[in-house]
Amino acid sequence: QVQLVESGGGLVQAGGSLRLSCAASGRIFRTYDMGWYRQPPGKQRELVAAITSGASTNYADSVKGRFTISRDNAKNTVYLQMNSLKPEDTDVYYCNADVLTTDWSRTAYWGQGTQVTVSS
Image (cartoon, rainbow, N blue to C red; front, side):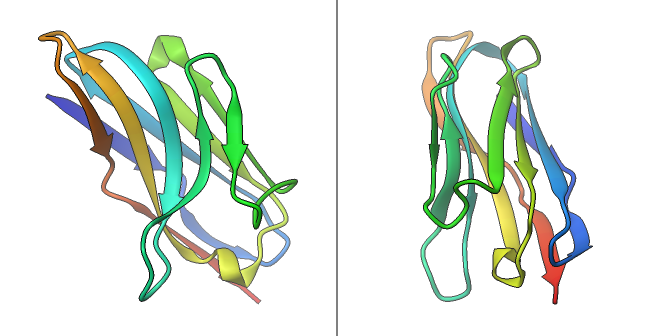
């Protein structure tokens, strides 16, 4: 019913920047919290940054001051601006959106993931 399509990943040198985008489409009535997660090898998926529909934000300690999450509610799109990237930021980044569909079903959806690789 709802699809999340991520873009913007790639290879960058340490200290560089990338901007991730995630567009939600489908039978969307309203989008609530949106966020970005990553899953280090052998570990559970962890929150990188989240943003409410009212634009309140929350960040993992490891990215505070370097990453900025934002959203465009009219486009059902969430962004992650990543600056001062470090090799330890290398991972697959997943978009998540809490969505109320037009048939009144509320579900958290995941994107397919986009690879971010930071070389030293």
